[in-house]
Amino acid sequence: MEKLNLRNIDDVKAIEAVPLSERVRAKSTYELISAGAKQNPDAVALYFLMSGEMWETPMEIPYRQFLGRITQTANLFCDLGIGPRDVVTYILPNLPHTHFALWGAEAAGIANPINPLLEPAQIRDIMNSAQTKVLIALGEYPGSDIWTKVEKIRKDIPTLKAIVRVMGPSDETNGIYGYDEVIDKYNPNKLDSGRQFAPDEVCSLYHTGGTTGTPKLAMRIHMNEMYSAMVCAVALELTQGTTMMFGLPLFHANAPLLTGLAPFSVGASVVMLSPTGYRDPGIIKNFFKIAEKYRVNSFMAVPTVLSMLLDVPTDGIDLSSLQYAMCGAAPLSVQVFRAFEERTGLKLLEGYGLTEGTVVSSCNPRDGVRKVGSVGLRIPYQEMKTVILDEKGNYVRDCKTDEIGVVVVRGPNVFKGYADEAHNKGVWVQGDWLNTGDMGRMDEDHYLWLTGRKKELIIRGGHNIDPAIIEEVLYKIDGVALAAAVGRPDKHAGEVPVAYVMPKPGANLDPAQVEKYCREHIAERAALPKRVNVIPSMPMTAIGKIFKPALRYDAIKEAFETELKTLADIADSIEVSVKEHKVHGTLALVTAKPRAGVSGQTLRDRINSVLGHYTVHYEVGIV
Image: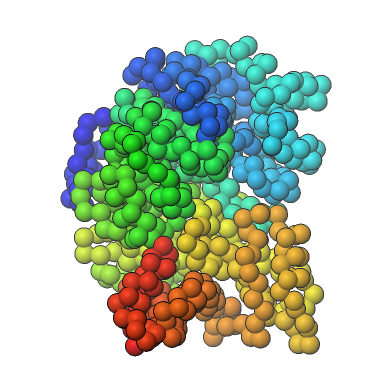
């Protein structure tokens, strides 16, 4: 791939001068990986680390074998009845098999990744919505309950015809095929189906939320994924001979594209950081040693991971190979951004995307000004703007420079809609613009600054949580009149869910009992509220809806006040108020009075050290 400058919006437009059809010539993700593999079939496609403690002894899979396994897996799925419109669901940790399953499923039909941490009922509902025909899942394995979940739900999915068990035996009388037992029977050299791909065919269904029984499945086509892979390869200067590493889960929309298809499309190498990725303590402890050993050039992480890595020593480790780290999925604090760059010497590229936009819509330019706190410039060939919508979600007008509005995008990365047509209401603006649900402003240099969310997702460590999952449970509790869940800022996870409940007249709600009920009835562990607040009245809009911004402001105030209590030795008083702001979206005002003998600057510095890891904008006033 030729070197392309990425400094400003003019460079973005210069890239667009070449038709996209000349930059993406393949017709499918399978053909794109095949083209990357042909550059050097003997180069290592994948270094797999079984654990963070075994980082020096990887499994090495060259491209010849990697592509062969994907082809064999596609032929296996075809043999089990998968055609272009049929769905293969996979429930797997990060293993080489997961890549074989994902890209093999897209070569044979449609891939549907599912988070292994979900409860059986959620998994069942997703598979039924997807009309899964073949399931590939991890067998009985120490520390994993995946197979136990499969056994609980397999008979509740009418469309399911076969199960492929990874690391487990066949039981063909019950429709179970041991992957490792049968895979070598299949042709590694070509797709036996003889399939002729079209770039606009659906290749994946990604779960993006939705309440129990009605999961939202985003339909993405081959061109969506190929285009995003091309953009990521350009943004990170990926070529044959460069190396990426990743520890984000392959069931999430991010990792398969940014640290999978993008490097595979150009024949680059990928270091897979254990089955549990960044959740493996050994991976975090040895992260920089791994980067040194494999001469890693770039990696993808979420803010939570970068915060953890700041505590890992780098003394005596050669990190000269590191060039770029891409950070997204949740806001990143300015303090963490600057500290991480100083520690590692690399360029941190903060970006923005969503599953429906095939994970990338904007990114700070690697060669230009990286405005800390912004999510950069729009990617080439995709349009982006902010707009004003009315109360019903109808388009009113485009925003002016630095005016906050709803972020909308359109282009070759935008998905084709949700599988269930009922979920597509309000998704599109002005015909074909995707309503991201995020609020932001565009500055005079065309950089996007996110200021909040119109949609109500809670983002915990890069994991999207639909508050309805929490609220549905809260409304089942006797005595609850009104309930709402919002995100409270957290310096490690970005946000954590908290709940607010208003009791019915005469009811006595105990927060501890409400929390206990949530633990027993909320299937998604990440969605468990960190705190339940019982309040006498719920803030409401003029038309009678719960006004969640007021609850978010209260959650921010509570989080900041809790942190600032640690400064009681140098402050007579500290007060926090939170309000809407026309530039930042939300602004916290911290008013503090120092104790006798303590300078105002000392108190200000201590406040900044306490609050600097948060992504909420704040101002400090000393009285």
